[in-house]
Image (cartoon, rainbow, N blue to C red; front, side, top):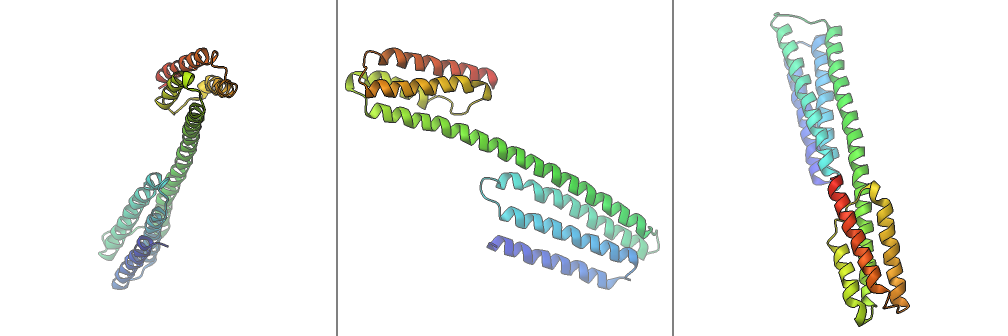
Length: 228
């Protein structure tokens, strides 16, 4: 548990103590006790979300910020409703049946649970999309590394042609789209073929292959532009 989580835990304990002190000042009717219990539950959920956020990694911190916002709204509504009903009962203005009060609080809790489930599902989708995007980004960067390795062993007479391929890969959009998988596989195959040409010193075949790879990368860029 980091320092921020410890401070948040202390703040939660203080909030519960404040609610408990308020409980001691008024008659402890079933309605008041029920309100106190739901209020404590709301405090625990809100500060629990903050502690969870504080323990997040950089990768999921932004997504996890939505959880305290959801529990904050629940805590405000729950505590405000409990205090309102307790005040109305204390001054004999109006008394709500305890069973109805509990029912309303359960509805509040059910709404919160629904929101948290939706946020959790959204978080999983975002993380899944992020992982896929990162994988595609990494694959293109690995392709760039392959071309750099090929250029390093290319004979002087063919370096200009291979350098144009390197620039095309370097400045291409590293992100991708599923519909481009076939074209990108062809690009990888041709780059692998380029490496074999360099190894076998087939300098006469290199210019045409390099031109073909550049055309494929240009075609990929056009398709990506349409898909965006």
